[in-house]
Every structure is written in C-alpha cells, then in structure tokens.
Length: 193
Ligand SMILES: Nc1ncnc2c1ncn2[C@@H]1O[C@H](COP(=O)(O)OP(=O)(O)O)[C@@H](O)[C@H]1O
Ligand SMILES: Cc1cn([C@H]2C[C@H](O)[C@@H](COP(=O)(O)OP(=O)(O)O)O2)c(=O)[nH]c1=O
Image (cartoon, rainbow, N blue to C red; front, side):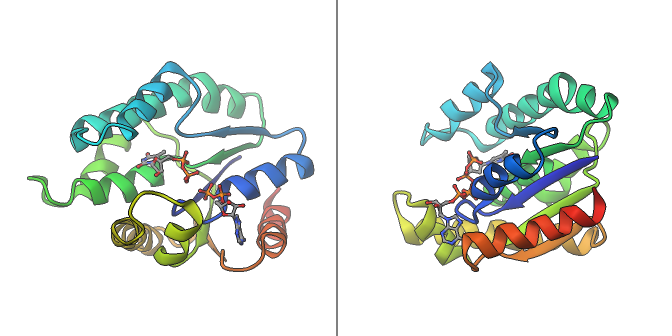
C-alpha cells in the first residue's frame, strides 16, 4: 500500500508525516526530494536562482526513479505500507507551474506523460489543502507575494490532478490546528490500513 502526502509548501505535510511515525511504527516513511545524491542535486538546483526549469524537472524525475527502484518498489514487494512526504504529484503540480511560461503547451500533462511509463500510482493521496497566502506565510521564503502567486498556480494544478483522479485523493482542511489535521489524516488512514 502506497500512501502519499501532497500540498503546498507550509501546508503541514512534514508535521503530519512525523506524527504518523508514532502511529504506524512498522510503515516505511520516505520523502521526495530524497536524501540520496540525486536529492542533493535537486536541492542544489532549488538553491540556484538561474536553474533551468526543464533541467530541474529531469533532476527531480531522476530522484524519483531512484527513489522508486531503491526504496518504494522493494518495500511494496515486502508487503510494507509506504508513506511518502511528496511524490509524483509534486512534480505534476510544481513543474507544471515552473514550465508554464516556456514552449511546452500543457506542462502538467507533459510531466505526467514522462512519468506514466515507469512510476507507481499511489493507492491513496492525502492532499493538505491550504490557501497560498497562509502557505507562503508558514513556509517563510524570500518574497512572500511572489511566493504566493507561484503557489496559486501550483494549487490550481493540484485541483486539476484531483479532478482527473478523484477517487485517489482525500482532501483535508490544512488550516485547522496541527492536532485536528493529524486526527483527520489518521481517520482516513485507519479506514484503509
Ligand atoms: N496545522 C498547522 N497550523 C499552523 N501551523 C502549522 C500547521 N502545521 C504545520 N505548521 C507550521 O508550519 C510550518 C510548515 O510546516 P511543515 O510541516 O514543515 O509543512 P510542509 O512540510 O508542508 O512544508 C512549520 O513551522 C510548522 O510548525
Ligand atoms: C518533490 C518535489 C518538490 N518540489 C519543491 C517543493 C518545495 O518547494 C521544494 C522542496 O520540497 P520540500 O523539502 O518537501 O519542501 P516543503 O517541506 O517546504 O514542502 O521542492 C518540486 O518543485 N517538485 C517536486 O517534484
């Protein structure tokens, strides 16, 4: 069983992911970007202001391919529950937004199409829903307003993904207290695990 946590920066994914480790001590907890050298390359690119968005897409995707073959698929083959803080949908939503001003017609669809031949679809995706202003505020960042404008595009992309695959997603109101968010997520997981 593969469960993923998705949402804007600051939506509270990592807070939930950490609290779930106490509830499900036998599950495999993982995340993207990963801690491998592919993940290091991704963080290098995140910190480079002049990073080419297409090059960045392929760094994130390389990190995902390695994550799948090294962590996710072996754990699923062993019958483990895998809980990942971010996964493929982050690429569809975020790189769908960073590539929006380039020559690719429908970047979200393009990014999804390059994953389709090799990725593993999550069984359940918990989407922590938060408005872009609160997200930008919570996650800090250099220019709050630029950040909120970008996150608005990312959020629109998440909405497109949910519309396209409604039975996979569960939406949780991430403006609640951390305790209420964690309880809502636990209720969803208890129903399927
Ligand atoms: N439900 C919540 N309400 C208010 N603040 C929160 C909530 N969840 C997380 N935070 C705070 O917001 C910031 C970002 O949370 P984090 O879990 O790192 O989000 P993400 O992993 O989605 O970027 C942290 O300072 C965290 O303490
Ligand atoms: C996994 C992934 C992350 N990202 C972005 C989201 C974040 O801004 C940044 C780092 O991810 P992350 O460390 O999960 O940040 P946060 O905890 O603030 O949500 O990388 C993408 O743009 N594409 C991706 O495929």
